[in-house]
Image (cartoon, rainbow, N blue to C red; front, side, top):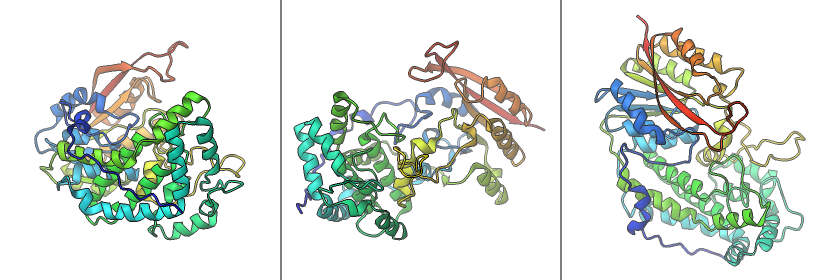
Length: 456
């Protein structure tokens, strides 16, 4: 088998790679994923009101942290506690809020490079012939030949009839089941068996697996979180989709195929190193001991109450899901990257085929994203918080939400809180969304922040 083991050079100190990251933001920002509902574009508006409620050194709890854009923006001023039920979210929060070390320009060479090379070289022993064919076709730009190549590479649950590259063995349930019991067995091989020619190209999968193997050699949990966050960023740059991880794009036209070919040329490793270099320029050191949790919100509130940490909190912020889109469907691949557990994949209604999106079958289903349960979910949320703490509660919501109009949410909050101050000062276009008024298309979305003060 041909081995492709060349390790790409990356011009770490070339400033042109850093220009997109070094804009003069009004508040601290660090993007890891293109995240639905992310508050990055609302931060200036949101910080105005949150800062009115917070003094220097106060303790702030972000109960549904997502990618921690709000916590990171407040990091210079307050102590931040961040929580999310998704494990990938807790990793991002740890990188942005808890890591208090430093990233130097040669950390990759010192800590990761040899392990990356070791795993990548072993994968090329197995997949090298197919990767070599992929690179040739991507460079040639031949859509017809590349589409045929994609049909010749098996993936978990989908062996191919003629097995040109002798890879069917790695797509079998027996092989994957063995890996589920030996998750850290060398070589790391999850992405190149689960996702080739779907969300990522074959070589891109090998890069992801090999960076992931190298990261697992890091002992410092917080620095490991930084590396994992950089890898999530790199995956979001390389992914063959509209920006999230719900479903990958199909070769339904020559135009679509050309886009896919160009996306497959992106080096995951180069994007990873770019993000790592950004941490050296944008990172904000902690002034206080921030903490990150990976709980269901009710379990966290109960835990903080039992250990009396909830008494230290001055402001609780909640930014729950707004729509019926389950986040676990759109970000299942970052979750799998972090867990690296060779998950069972959801099957279609026939129970014979894996669904196209290759979703984990243990995905969390939020009751805030279900029209039948959202009101009860908010009542339980307000009840759990108001009964355990006298901290101010701030709630982000919009008139494009599953519970609308926002007056319905305000009425529920008033059952548990003395006063509700409504901040309505930010609007943006809903272009491209399915939200309609009187059967017509796009409209402006109004964002609200409810400041809830406790009774008594």
